[in-house]
Image 1 (cartoon, rainbow, N blue to C red):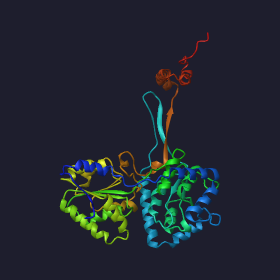
Image 2: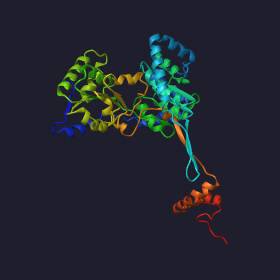
Image 3: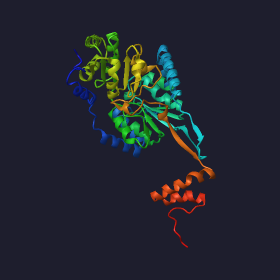
Image 4: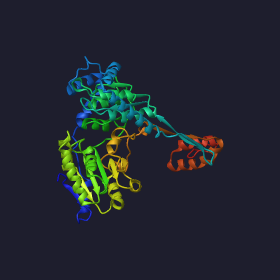
Length: 442
């Protein structure tokens, strides 16, 4: 049995073991803060020269002989190098992702309250967004679509992508996806230096307002350090999946779902909640069989052995929701007869996949909702990437003389209580009243 953490709600130590599961630390964050701070400072000070030096050091690429920006001709050539059926799949995914995110766009609003004050709010996109994409032989066209398309749908005027190209290598599918997602410019830089360039700008790269996209420890640390100068999406941790399944499922299906996330990373986590010891044993056996076949079996096996868990409870329909809400998973599958009934009690999950024929993997690529989701129990307070991450809301207030006369006196009183007399004066002068705190000079 490769899963070492099996919990049964009937056991006396269940509560303690469940607490240990939810607080399990799955990765040791590298202490790169000082190194990243130095890289950011170098980019701020030296601009392109720093990018050239750091790219030569980390990616073995000479940006004095290779252009920093990927040309339109290179993008077209990369697209043509992709198989026609793969290009068609990208088209389908892009269309579905764009359609879903278009439905997230919020409406502006204006109304007049009972005091006669006109109020409302208006949504506008940021001017520019930056997208970080892992590079080299890494093949994540789906991440390009998921990060860039919401920005485009939001109305962002300029979308800039940065991607490291170690030894000059870049996956053509990444460029093909960028073209479909409407990315305006692509630069061959990565790491903390790319984040700094997006945040502060250089001679070649104009700064952006929001930076999104996954990366290594250096990228994550850089996003933390530039936050405030720019907005960021989130600091994502290792991938995770929680499957709630009754005993009527095919164990091989559930095993495949669990391993779909375990194969991401040795510190990913796959958890099963079920209502049958026999079914749990069958899933474990199915996982063992699957691990004999997967190309990434070594990664998936380490994840399953070190961080995988099975929780056995009496009835998934009545007892699973509380456990799910506590774990607040990134991905949640409800492989039960009536997933809607169970889902209504779920408050904390990044994405919920309903029913036996909805594997989480369909959401990674083509369903439409975003696959950039909160991890490490952050779903208790955070949401996945959306159009709103590329927009901001401005409130609107309009008074006329009559409405100001109705609400102004109370504002005067509050300003006086706070000792902010210029605040009060700006209102009182319009009401032809003596402002609070005014001196009587005779």
